[in-house]
Amino acid sequence: MAKKSIKIRAKVKDDVVTVKALMTHPMETGARKDKSGELIPAHFIQEVTCEYGEKKVVEAQWSGGVSKNPYLSFKFKGASKGDKLTLSWVDNKGNSDTTEAEIR
Amino acid sequence: MMQINFKRRILLKSSLAAGAISVAAGAGLLTPRQVLAAWPTAAFNAKMVPEALQALLGEGNTETSADIKIKAPDIAENGAVVPVTISTGLTGVESIAVLAANNPVPLVANYTMGEGAIPFVSTRIKMGKSGDVVAVIKAGGKLYSANKGVKVTIGGCGG
Image (cartoon, rainbow over all chains, first blue to last red; front, top):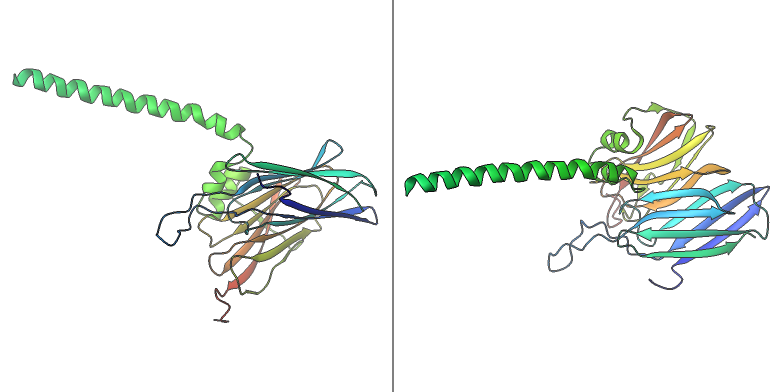
């Protein structure tokens, strides 16, 4: 899949880590038609998982109803500066991407 | 000759019926596999909010809660990108589901909260037309919900 499809930023403040992530993905619902009237096949991220130290922090399940180039933000507790977290996604075609980010 | 043809019809019919039965059995076998799959296909195919909730969380009824905050624009100029932020003061939150009531497929996203997660999610969603954004939060085994109306003016003409 595309290289570097995830942009992520994780910041810690008062023991709360705020994660903001942007993914590059067409997020086709499968209901849209192109100019010639043909249906554009569905192609969207189904699952996004964020792990911190072997533990799942947040697991998202998405439909094609999430906007193109999806943005996701969430918060969690119990991590400190310099720790690493990983974010990965899998789409309905089996493509996936994973990235690691350092908490700042 | 007629006799033979007649029998042939019967044979065809019965084999068709058998075929239908095996298809049904196949579907029956498929169901548990779908349940095991992490991505809830049935919930994401449901056309109505209660149906989607039933398929996703096993219950269609929710209790309205004032403790859920939905941050979304009152008027969204572009239905393709509607920023939605959901947060709550509820404790023991297990999952947060985001639905757009008037979308062809209402269930947009479902977030499962892991250890240490704070019940807060922010995403941008698509909305086909004006309607309610519904947040459904599962906390302590119960379902709580909140709505927020969003008016979608495609093209940004302010209609």
